[in-house]
Amino acid sequence: MESKDLTDIYSAISIILVFITIILDLIIRETQIFDQKKKPDSSKATEITLYNRERIRLLFKIASVFLFYLFTFYLLLPNSIKIFNVSTISFWEFDLLSTFYLFINISLLVFIYIIIVNFIKIYRKR
Image 1 (tube, rainbow, N blue to C red):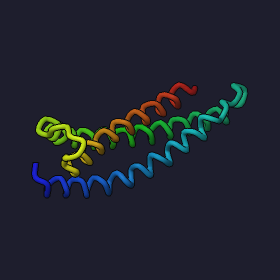
Image 2: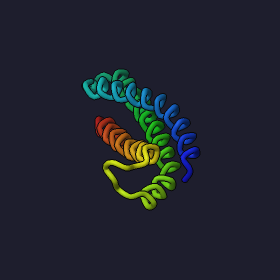
Image 3: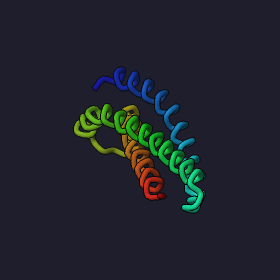
Image 4: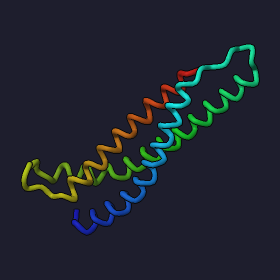
């Protein structure tokens, strides 16, 4: 893959990832706040309804960010596999753009894992 192509892809994807990572950070904070809440007593029907609505709303937010990260990972995967197959592992003489490209794709996997963990945490909180 040409260096110019990787530079263009890297520039475009980095801008998108900055914004979605900020959104992910906000959702993680919201998840932590919700996780600290206690479920209302069963005698308080309106509070339970509000609690469940907030939980469902948060699950949809987490799922939407998950889908975006998964889609981005999927788009970058073919080029990552090409880079991985063509490149040689070297600690001193390596292609910087290709290495960054692989790091971005690996970090997307880490973010996907974090999102899944938070989704499961909120989903189980009934």
